[in-house]
Length: 426
Image (cartoon, rainbow, N blue to C red; front, side, top):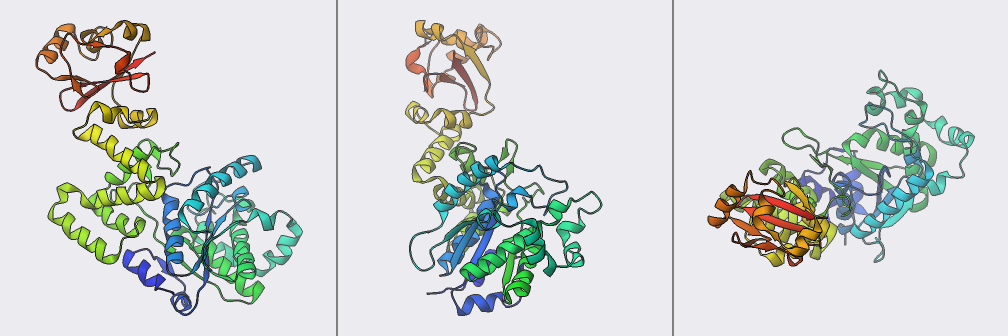
């Protein structure tokens, strides 16, 4: 049974531009629509998660989604939104990147069940045997230079320089739409608003080459309320791969969203209904200090991307840093999560031999590490019951031993409620 896909996206604020007739098409029949993913990395990131959510909503509404990975277009590079020519990737790197992205895409969409099961395609499969002569005869002759020059992605780069390779990108992407139209009766393409020019070139090629009618819409490009680029933190891009961005750091990214951003993010990145979102907003506005919206987003998205176990670990890790926790909580963290939680905390290395024989807590705080200025200061803090080892209070007689090592390497020393140090046994 079809549901109103466009209406669902409209209340969520997920439509920027839409081609006339798109809404009517979606209302009367099950259609096939696609999004393309650029294999510039072996992992997708939170920016890519937005078009994935569009595909998810399309499938939930009863339509059939196609996820396209650009094995061919990735060799060229999309000029959209770029101020300079991109470095070309070799085939080996592209294939490696595609394998990583395909694995992630299969996690979000249903590729097996029902007549609207998702389809995964790689445009290299239909471009690999196409010669340059074939391409300019069969595709290039249908689009004029004037038409291509009018696209924003081209106009913005003319003065700074645009190679013929990147200039031709819109034809390659447009040819994808023609292939999917002919092969799967795919009539809809969507993506970020910076893709409008490429997408509409595709609809034009479908009309001119196949004599068909194709449609398009785009969603807004997300930016943070402070003007910063969404999906970027001080430590870099927020990836979907847990090896690149730990589940804890991923969880914290959503948790740290501003109130203004959270109102958009909960619509864009969760599957909560309109009624559920509006109820949460009322609760959040009544008690903003509880950060209800941010917590809901962080939990929903972290579980969808990384699973329930990783979400539990992320919440535990957050509790360790910001709330009451125990030594057992600390020991439940992997080395990666432990280092992510305490990123930026002062560290010092000591010999593992000293740990084996028992290292005085006073030495661990002062003479061996310079965490504190002197042994006298260390003893004063210990006398005030302000020092802990792995979240357990200790006295000045305490010896750090191998039993205190977390992941056989680390010891967390706390001073007061907010100051931490990490001892590394080497």
